[in-house]
Image (cartoon, rainbow, N blue to C red; front, side):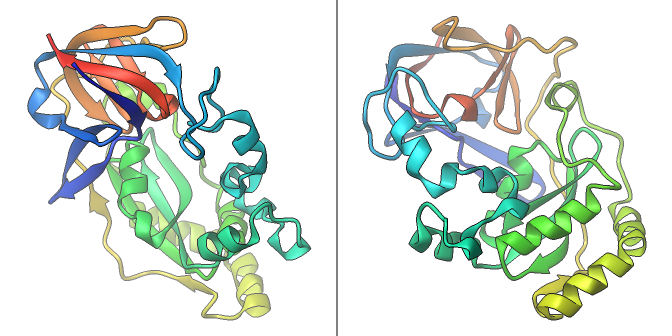
Length: 274
């Protein structure tokens, strides 16, 4: 058995196909070759904060102890809702971190995960962000100069398309293909005046609409999707086992149920083939 602190699964794209690894502290276990084989994950009853390594009884914000969750800028509400960024008000929890994280190019994108959705990500997180959401198609449609602006653009677009993934639908199969370019052009048309106002206020270079990028197709390693989605929870049952049928988003799909690996970041877990 390999034991370590669970982290979000590292991913890479080889052509259109996703390759996954299970990360337990310093151990990285290739998962694609294990599809079709029986595996077991066993929670060891300990959680260590992914920031300060303090032992904690409960994980907050995907792997933090409560003090870190309260003080870190990466755990603030504006990370989930960037239009709420308050750096300009002088109230950022970690101004230096905010300068490096938020004041860089961000991309607004369309993705097809459980249907069309709009989202944002840093340029360095393409295509990782799309893979983590279980998107089978994605395309950047705007590049903006900071996180706050990306949130403002997203708010415009989500008046017309969803901004959330239905994770249960995402795990039940692949959605029907969508013409993302047509959706993009429709959004640009519907939001033309508001987008122009953002550009006038912040400058054309600060909000650039992208029309020359082709959509990325993404193929997940799944042999069989579940007819009914039943999720495992380490807090209720420390042992998860079954035949690995596939991987999509940050979920392991077993013949016995699914588990969101990212949700249990910082949990001390053992892994083994059985």
